View 1 (tube, rainbow, N blue to C red):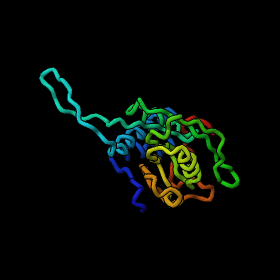
View 2: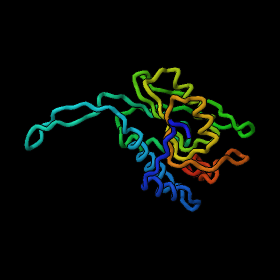
View 3: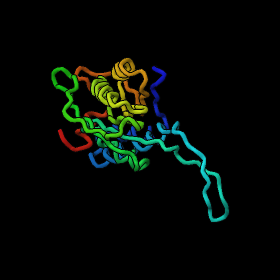
View 4: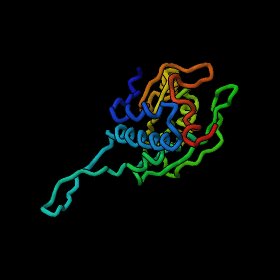
Length: 210
C-alpha cells in the first residue's frame, strides 16, 4: 500500500459503513450515514492541522489554550455523489468554502467527462479536501485533482468512503503527493467498473434515482 493512503478503521466508521453497504438501507438513512461517515473522516484527516497558543479568560482565571493557526480550508465535492459528504464536513469546519467539480462517467469508455467547475477565488490560500464517496477506476478523482492543482492550493487531500485497489493504484501514481483517506479498501472492480463488494451506485442511493 502506498505510504500516502490511510484506511480509517475507527469502530464507529466501520459500523456505519456496514449499514451503508446493506442493500436494505433506504435513501434517507443512506444520506445520513454518508454525512456521518464524512464527518468522522474529516475529524481524523484534520489531525495534522497546526495550532497556536492563546490566552483565554475562563470564569475562574486565565488559561493557555490552543486554536487553529489561521489555516483556511475548502471542500470540493465531485458532483454529484460528493455532495452527500458536504454537510458532514461542514458541520465540523463551517467556515470552509465549498467549490464544485462536475464529472460523469461515459458508459462506454468508463472515462470521466468534465462538465462543470466552480472553485473559490482564493483557492491558492487554502487547504483543499476533494470529496467523492467512491474511488473506482480513479479517473474522476485524478482529473479533479489535476484541475485543482492549476489553482496552486497550499495542500490537497482526497477523501472517499470506499476505494478499489485499481483506483488507489491509478490515483497514487498520478498524484503521489496527495494523501488518500478512505473508510474501506475493497477487493476489485467488476467488468462494469463497479467496486466489489462495494455498495452499488452511491449517487443513485443518495438521491433515490436509478
